[in-house]
Image (cartoon, rainbow, N blue to C red):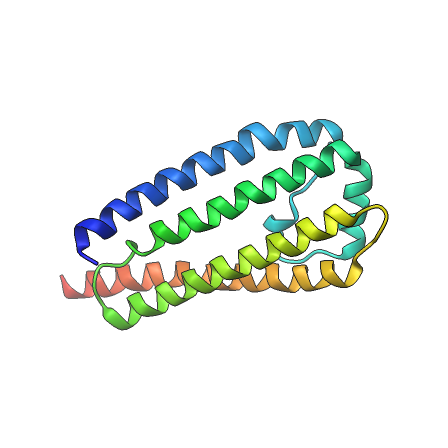
Length: 166
């Protein structure tokens, strides 16, 4: 793909990520906090236990659980938008760019899997407590954060390489 097309994809991805982030954190999170003042979004934690998730689901009630499922749909859009924006993060060093693209793709896949697992666990609650599914989601979440850290480290590595060339 041409650099101009990648730039357009990156700008659209960044704009899409901004809109999805606004929707999630300004429009959806406050009503969840009204239902449960201690509510914490599981995707944002490196580690969580199934019981923490089930306790939170209980406090949110059926209305909050329905809102959470909509939030995971928006989070899926955010992940894809961030992937579109991620390709434009490093200018040249080909191996670094390929590694960062791979980390971004794997991070997006991990986020999509995490969203699907948690949404499925929420959908079945309270009739079924899918403890194993939540445990797997927690491991995937930790992996997603590790991949995010690698990607950010690549950003700084790219900056150092650029600075060394100057």
